Length: 186
Image (cartoon, rainbow, N blue to C red; front, side, top):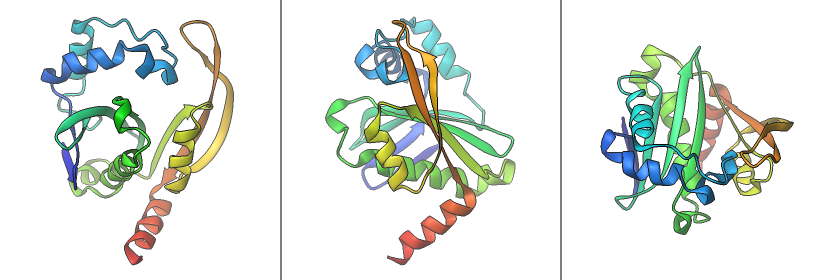
């Protein structure tokens, strides 16, 4: 899978991406929001196995590139006409510059409108969550029309024993298509 719009490319991760993903996943600064302030401590072989697990599947682990440079990753798992997503811009110099909003919209557009994907498994709902402390992500999601479903207090305990709460979001196909039509009309 490869999606490109302007200077942003989202493409399926390959085994050649294992060193980069392994570096990001083992970096506590990158992974703290996901409950791993000390990083995953994952071996290169574990990272390779994780990438290989997506090969040939509808669900994908992807690399995000801006101006041809890898800056982050995203994933989506598809099942029962739903997709669960996760997004991460790992290169801090590319954060807070509007790229997240574009990347997320590209992903939503693919999941809801790609003919090849939807002929195999029509997606009616996308859902995800974020750490309650991640106010920046919440602002982006809500500005894109996502519905805030609930706050889950103490959703998980991070690796250093601190309870973390999460905010759950969704976007339905119906709401996405209405938002898309509104964007195209302006």
